Image (tube, rainbow over all chains, first blue to last red; front, top):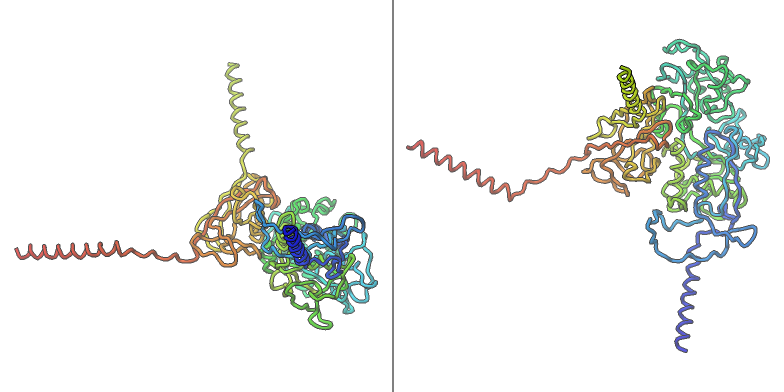
Length: 438
Length: 195
C-alpha cells in the first residue's frame, strides 16, 4: 500500500514537472495568436518584379523556409499549428556532429513559424513589381493606381531605390523598401581590343551621344554602339539616374530616348543583364558595342555574361569589395518592398520616414498588438520581412534545420553566392541588417 | 627500307601523341609570388596555366583548402569580398593576376576567422586564427570546383615577438670565465715583462 502511495506521488510530481515544462518549452511559440504574422496557417506568398534579384530572393526564401516551424496538427484541415504540441524530451546533445547553434535557446517561432511558402513570380522589372502593390486600391505613391501583375504579387523585388514622382508623391507613401544587399553596375564591352577605364565624364558623353566614336575617348576608332535597356528595369533606373545626376541633366533625362541609343531588331529594348539578346541581334557590332548591367549577375552567370568584359570606372575595378565599401562609383541597394499595411518599421514620430531602432527588430515593433498585418498572406509577408532584416548575430535568429546554421548566416551566404554584398554599416537602419526606407 | 619508314612514321606518331597528351592533360595550376611573409594589402602575383581558354578567372582568399576541410564553404571559409576577377585566361589557358592579400579579419562582416602569423595574438570575439591561408583560383564561375586549385600563403607578424631572455645560469659562469681568463693573461704578461 505504501509503495502505491509512493508511486502515485512520483507520477504526480513527474506530471506536474512535465506540465511546468510544457509552457516553458513553448513560451515563445505563438500558436495561432495572430501576433507578428503568426496565424498558425501556412500561406503562399508571391514576390515579383526585379530580374536582378529573382534568384537571390528565391535563395533567401528557401533558407527562410528551412527554419524550424510549428508542429502542425495533421489530423485534418486546415492543418493549423498544433495548439498543444507535445513537449520535446529533455535530452542532452549527444550527436556525433554537435549542434553548431550558438544560440541554443533561440525560439522556433521567429523563423517561418507556420510554414508559409515564399515563391518568386516571373521577372518583369522592378518598376512592374512596385507599381502593382496596392493599399486599398492606391499604389505605393499616393494618388497612383496600381497596375496588375501576373500573377498577383504580395511583395515586390526591387533593384532600385524608391522614386519620387513629379507631383511630389513618393513610393514610400504607402510602401516600405527593405534594403538587404548591395550591387554594382558594370559597364560591358565584348570584342574591343582594349577594355580598360572609362571616366564618369566619358560615360555621360557616351550616353548623351555627345561622343559617338571611340576615338573621341582616346581608343581605337569605331562608331560606339550604345545599347539601351527595358525601362521598367531597376538596372535601367539606377544607371539612368547615375548619368542624369553626374551629368547635371534634366530630371526627365532618358537614356533610351537619346538618338544614338540602339534597340533590338524587333524594335524593343533588351531586358537587363542578358548579353545573349544583343549578341544574337542582327545589328550587333562586337567590336564597338557597350552596355551595362548588374555586377552580381555578371559574375554569377557566364551564360548571361557570354563574352562581356568589364570596364573600370574612374579607375575603380568593378568588384565586390568596391561595392561593399562604396568606393566603386556606381552602386545600388537591393530592396524587398512591402506595403505599409503588411510590414513597416515603427516610425520615430508621426509622419516620420525614419525608423525606431529595435533590439529585436520585429518589423512593426515588439509590442503586441502591433501595427501591420497579423494573419493571412499579409501577416506572412510581415513574418518573412522581419526574419530577412533581423540584425546579424541576434539570439533570436532561427535555425536552418537542414544545415544547423542560423538564418542570418544562411542569408549572408545566399547573398554572397549571388555576388551581391551585405548592406554596409553606414547605410543600415540601426537595429536592422537592412536599410529601411519608409 | 620500308620497315625503316614504317618505324619512323610510328615513332613520329608516338612522339606527337605523347606531346598532344601532355598538352591536353595539363592540369590547372598557379603559383602565387610572393607567397610568404605577406603583409596586409601586399600584392601576390598569381601566374596560372592549364585552365580553359578565354575564361573569366575567380581568385579568392580562404582560411583553408578542401584537402584539410572537405566541407569548405566558399561563402564562409573564403572572404567573398576578396574576390578578384581582373583576369581572363588567354588562348592557352594561361595568365596572371595581381591579387591583394589581406592579413587579419576578412572584409566580409560576420566571418569569425583571421589570417595572420602564428605569433600574432588571436583577436577576441571567438575568432579562429589561421597561420596558413589559401588562395583559391578557378574559372568561369566561382562555384566551379573542377578547376579549383588552392595554394598556401603565410604572413609576416604584425607584432614584435618578445626577445628571449638569456639565462643567468649560462651568462654568469661565462662572465666569470672571461674575467678569470683576462686576469690570468694580465698576470702572465706582467710576469713576462718583469722577467
